Amino acid sequence: MRSQGDCSRQSRGGLHEGLNEGQARALLRQLRRRFVPLAPDVETRVRDADGARLDDWSERILDAHELDEVFSGNPSH
Image (cartoon, rainbow, N blue to C red; front, side):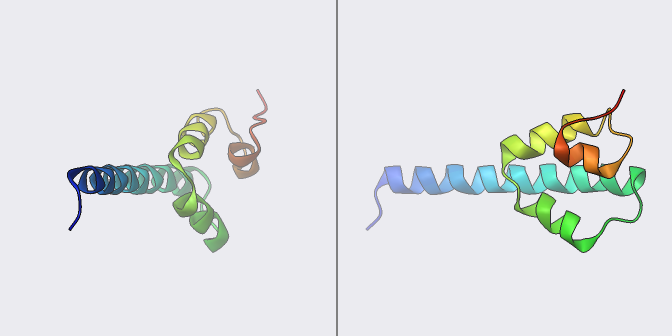
């Protein structure tokens, strides 16, 4: 039988997974709109990223002039 703590940890894990999935979906929409078309490996990279990395890329896209700048962290101004 599972303890209440085990169920709570699983719920939090599912919540984080769902949040990351939504964040990845939003970032992919932004990337597609700005840098059409996206290579399949870029889509996979975004879908496989953790929340902290998605946060970082979501900020970098605002200043990036090229797709590589989103992922390298060196946007040109």
